[in-house]
Length: 455
Image (cartoon, rainbow, N blue to C red; front, side, top):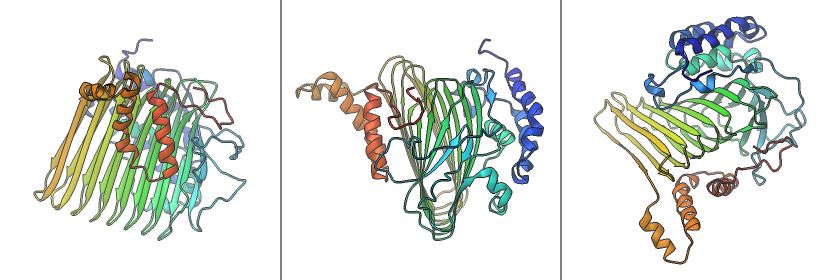
């Protein structure tokens, strides 16, 4: 089938599937999740799968990713996971509280309680929505189904994902690590819905690792909603390392209250087509948001990072630094929007996107945007797209360094500005190592994985 499929025809495929499995989606699910399905489905019908005519998706063609006849992972597989053997992103010195999401479904670690403080909940979203719906009901959804068709499709299909709750003034000393694995003997579509609530004065670090364990084609549509209450702190790391036949549609929505601090790191080492949507709402005075991103692309890979920060209250600060290295025929996109609403005075917002093209065939689109409705603010943005500085390369070669090593040194220096912002030292060291391997053309391997994942 040609990839030039009419938008309506391709969208109809997914609306028809929803109609076929509607009873299965509602059956056994919670009222909290079911209450959103009908409207979400209607919103998807109205919008359809986004095309390049959609301003927010103008740099990414999703048609080829939605074309295959996928097996939909709407039911949880009966399996027992041995958490002692599960791949932990190969960071041996990092001591974490471990959770597993397999094909969009949460699996508990039944063998150990871990080091989670009293009151902290790390569990299945499906289970919590049934057993403790009050933890979800008091928060209005940040993921608006009428604003993004991928969010609408996720909400219509969503059954499970991970749920994290950190109660008031609790500090989680060991990071929480969620291993997100895709594996099936058929091409598979997965839906994952995650929820994180960090209450007043609480602190936590979360590491989400995305991996594929065999070479079948995958489309993963994930939505994560995060609420950071007064004076809370959250570090959220996303490590993406999937194979070239995987499509990862990843949407994260974060709302911050006064004096909160949230830092997001997105490291894309490998993948086929990746779309990262990241939206912050700074809804309390003195909130601070930091967003760091780094992506490495080769072959015909495509990575699209779309960010939006809404400064809704005065005296808030945001900082964005995204860097990309593109090789061979790869392509990338960055769209960053900063919106300072009226009366959000004393805002300080900074955004930068730098891109390094290693070949003439690589292609990068960048679109920084500022919308400022207040008058007492400090805002700046900038973007660069270029190749390796030949003068600097000549300088290194003149000091006896061969060309390949000199290029590698310059690329590592380019990426290090983002890597150094990772606060978890064992993770930072491991990312440094993986970045070095990635720049040398070596595909990262799952050395300690119980599965066959030589991708």
